Image (cartoon, rainbow, N blue to C red; front, side, top):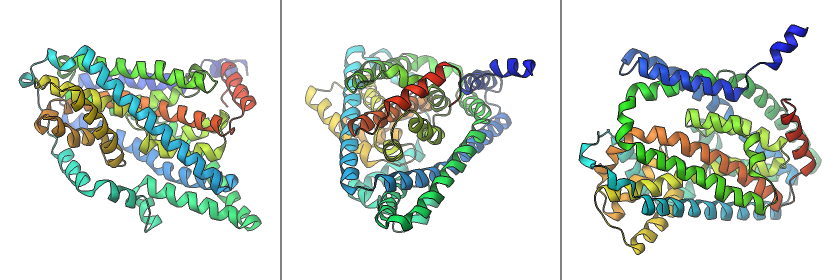
Length: 431
C-alpha cells in the first residue's frame, strides 16, 4: 500500500505529460524530416486524437447549455448575459487588434527581411475559402446562425446554430415547469457521462500532441523558422503582454487574480498550445470553470460562444501580420489607413467566424485593402501553424477570463466554491 501511495504521489500531471509529448514530437520531427511515411503516420495519429475530441464536444455543449439555460429560466437575464458577453468580446478583440498594430509600428518586424528570399507555401485552399467567405457576407453569416435543420448542424459540427437551438430548447424546457425536469435530469446525466469520456480521451493527449508537433516540424523543418524568427518571437511576446497586462488588469477590475485562473487552466492552455486546437480544451474547460465557481448557465453559454467570437490571440496575430507584410513590401501606412485596417479586421473576423483556418482566411480577406498582394501571404503560410499554437492558447485563456468576468458581473460566481477548488489544487488533489 505504501508503494502504491508513493507511486501516485510521483505520477506526472497531464500538463507535464503533454510537455513531454511536445518535446518528443519536436525530436521525431527533426529525425523524420521530409519522411513521407512518418509524416503520414503522425498526421493520422494526430487527426485521430482531434477526432476523439470533436466526438465529445457537441454532446457536452448541447447538454450543458440546455441544462444551464433551463436552470437560469429567465429570458431577460439571458438577454442581459448575451449583451454583456458580446460587448466584452468586442472590446477585448479591439484592444488585441490595436496592440498588434502598436507593436508592429514600434518594432517594425517587416523591415528586417527580404521578402523575395523567403520560401513560399501553397495557400490555394485558403484562397478559395476566403473568396467563398467574402461572397457570403455578414448577413449570410447571421442567417447561418439559425439552424434550419438542427441535426444537420450537429453532424457538420457547426457550433453557432447548435448554440442557438440549445438556448431556445433550454428556455422551452424551463417554460413547461415540472414536465421539463425529466429532460434536465436526462441531459445532466448525459453531460456527466461525456465528462467521464473526456477524462478517458485526455489520457491519449500526450500521444496526440507528440504526433501533431512531429508532423509540423517534419514538414517544415527547423531551418525554415530562421528568416521569420523575429516575427515569431514578436508575436509571442505581444501575446504574453496581452495576457499579463491587459487580461491581468481586467481580472483586477473584477476582483480576482489572473494567476489563480491561469493555475486552474494551465493544463488546458498547454493542450491548446500543443495541438493548436481550441476544441481540444472545450470539454475540460466547461467542467473546470463550473468547478471554479461560475454558474453552469454562464459557463455553458460564454465558453462556446467565445470560441467563435472572442479570439484575442487571433486578433493580435492578424493585425501584426498585416503590418509585417506591409513593411516587408515597403508600404507605408498612414494613421488613417491603420485605423481603417483595425475596423476592417474587427468586421472581417466576425464575418469569418466558423470558417476553417479562420485567422489566415481573415488575413487573405484583409491585406488587399492596404495594398499588400495576396501572394505575400505565401511567405508566412509555412509558419502559420507555429504561431497558431500561441494564438490558440491566448484564445483559451481569454475565454476562461470572459467566463469569470461575466459570472462576477451577474453575481453568478461563488467565492467559496472557487476558494475550495484552489485549496484542493494547492493540496495536490484533483477536483
